[in-house]
Amino acid sequence: MEGFEGWDDYAPFYDWENAQTLGRRDVPFWRNLALNAGGRVLELGCGTGRVSLPLARAGVRLVGVDRSSAMLALARQRLHRGRLHRQLGLVQADIRHLPFPAATAASKGARDSFAMVMAPYGILQSLLSERDLTRTLSEIRRVLKPNGTFGLELVADLPSWEEYRKRVSLKGWRGRRGGTHLTLVETVRQDRTRRRTIFDQEFVERRGRQSRVHRFSLAFRTLSVPQMTRRLERAGFEIATLLGDYGGREWDKRADVWIILAKRPVVK
Image 1 (cartoon, rainbow, N blue to C red):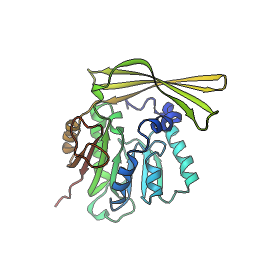
Image 2: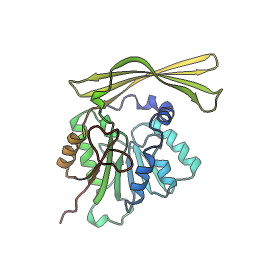
Image 3: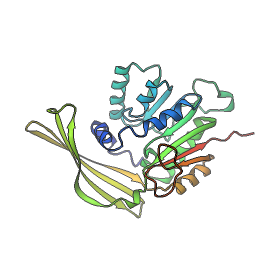
Image 4: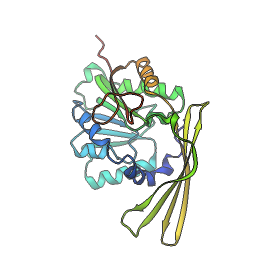
């Protein structure tokens, strides 16, 4: 599967970078949605547990899946420290082939059914082929119980990102001052033929006089909200809401946040 490359390499730096960019701005949104879902929740691409762990601490019962063993290793460490095993299960899996039984109307109260599936912060855009996205949407619908909610976020307006080379995007300390100093040097490229945005990452890790450079690339597919809603409808979902921020504002193409909430309809 294309799009998987780079995520294991990204694991040691994921939380540091997100703390300085996105932070936890999205966590209350997903927490409130999950607490009102009426059952167990599945998070796709849970990574280091940035979203899953706060939800578990709030009382949400959920399962997080990710393909990256390095990401999940960090999530499991935090899960153990937080003693949240009863609330959160972590599974290494390919989201194109979810290892869960199909949900039906009869599984409404079953322990293995999902009342909500969530895909925060562009995880579906790491599926670089139409075939992989179609397969994943089919799997999501299969494991989501009727009338359940599927929530996903797209990285806003990727095609308009400015291309640049070797720009210092972030710098700062990881942990307490005097520990490790990190610098992110980033290149952004657009492959408009294949509708992809590629981020070439170079993390420079310095501790005292020693330094180490980590290089890898992450690629995202450039999909708009209308394009994704059409794919969701073809996969058998009904669109419930389009949001343009984490507070509930209606979406428009200039919004900084792109969220789609869809439902698996009840078949009568």
